[in-house]
Image (cartoon, rainbow, N blue to C red; front, side, top):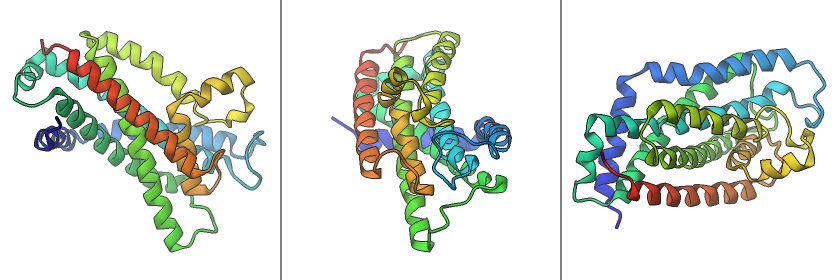
Length: 261
């Protein structure tokens, strides 16, 4: 049974922690912003195979960097479970009269909200480096595209918060968690088409890319912002939702079996 009050309390705790540590916003935005600066300006005038004609590399790159922001902030949020276990807070909430599924959902949605805030900050900053929406966008289409981007950001963040929680529920060492997460994150990032078109990859690697949940999130954001995507937006939305539900279920299963101490 899902207790919405418990989900809200844990969501609120994550939000308060986030707002009290404003350096997290700077730290989370800094890496994708540097990627955007160096890769965007470094390759912006080069002919990159697979890019749609008339599309600059910076415009191609920004949705990928938004996906990177969501991926990194979401996966690392799982480390809070290990710190809570170390300091005894996890034990306290585990013995509370609420289901562990509700606890897991509260953590996932709290981490997802903070990830979306960081993503919006990065999106706003990208305009300083020359990014702009598709030229054919009017005001209504621009607002609709922004809202659609938020939906994809939410699905990406939920998916990888859940994945990070799944790893954290099966581990006890924070340093080991960081090593495993880094090992998982970078292949997910580079195989998502965030920095280069997937069509440029060898066929057998393309197959792996199509199994990557981040691929459909990044592609959906591109479709929402610059109208340049591999798949129809409804297909990206369907697959992103599917992966989010599967990984929420997986995270809930592992968290329910985990120990508070």
